[in-house]
Image 1 (cartoon, rainbow, N blue to C red):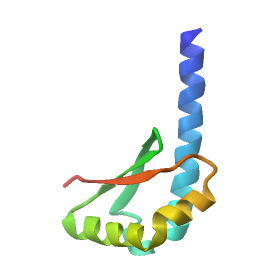
Image 2: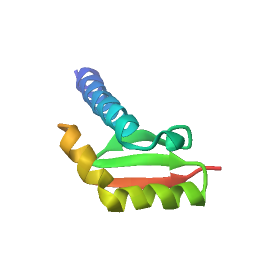
Image 3: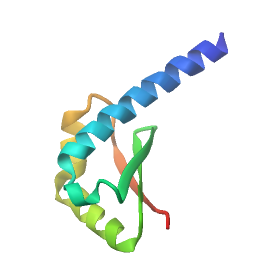
Length: 88
C-alpha cells in the first residue's frame, strides 16, 4: 500500500539522519552540540538549526573548512548541502 511505501521511505530517511547526526557529533566541536542541531535530511539537504547568528557564522566556517566533505565521506547517503536555520 501507499502507506507502507511512505513508512519505508520515512524509516530510510530517519536512518540516514541518525547516521549524519552520529558523524556530526564526532566531527563538530563539542561546544556546538547543544546549539547547532541537525534536525532533517531530505533531498540531499541537511537542515541544521542554530541558536543565533554567531553560531551560524561558526558552523558556516566549519562547512567551508571541510565539514560537508567529511560528512559525505562518513555517510553512505547523498548529502549535497548543509542548510543553516536560525531559531531563537
